[in-house]
Length: 418
Image 1 (cartoon, rainbow, N blue to C red):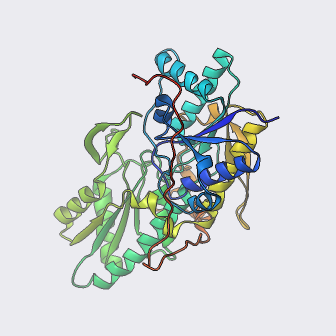
Image 2 (spheres, rainbow, N blue to C red):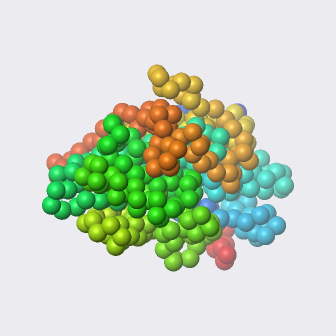
Image 3 (tube, one colour):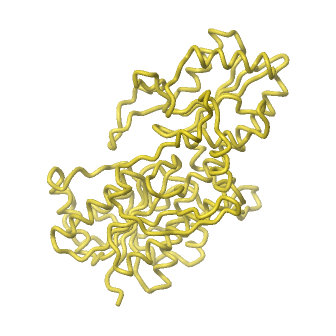
């Protein structure tokens, strides 16, 4: 028998399809007569008892949520430390859960969020509180362990590949008298999955991107500049895709933005494209343009992958099913059973095998020269960007997205002073 309330929260950088997971959670819970609360701004909302009553939203609004980018309930970068180090916060969280009879906690995020969900499950066990904690996977970096791919990545990968192919046509048209080199910066701190996805834009050896720089390979400036010069002299122009997380052999980020670190301890990155463009112009004398798509990579719902959209909804639905079956400290993972035809399914994996682990690209996905992807990588990546997920458009020519009411639940506890 189902008892209690389900609390859903979003964490970390949002994606084009994280709300599709939210819609999957809410729709499945409604079908099973389970009340769903959402924490405003992730775990911070839970600590502040700033909770949203999703039952106040219409079925049409929840359906529209599935094609709306961003984070409908707000997200945050806020990492809880160990149970001992942050004991007061954990005790406060438990008080909020008890006050609202929350028996199911679903946290939608990446590596650090899986760690938070794992810690909350330990907290409940330590205090003997009946709580089922499920991590819901989300990241555009595709670096979550265990799962074959992660919802959010496929759409960002498609945006990247399409953008690079279209920009390359522009560069090729102007190369005779203008731009010879174009540098595109892709997100990816320690894993170069998104930069690798740009390689799907190429259909022959001379096609863009002719050079891809990955965090998995040390950045060698002399080798890079020599390769750019070689490509320009052979093809007439060159498109470079560089991961924001490329590092020198001594482990220094090429694009440390100097903005310190966030609450997860991550160095703020940004600017590798401008740095590389400057080096190319200074050393080789070519006219260069560069771009930093940044948030555009993760918010581009208009060009979302159908595979990604379907998987995002599937993991949200599965998370509710796992919770109601009494499962705890698990995450719905994507399991690939075939490349061609592409087949996948969702299976539960232990959260502790996901939390704080990082999946980098296999060595076999990188060309021996380090500047591109292999056929093996292409076979893995291509199905993830396949298909379109159509949007409704208004008379103004723009997509019709939804803004939820986000009606707050009445608070029952004193204000949090943390």
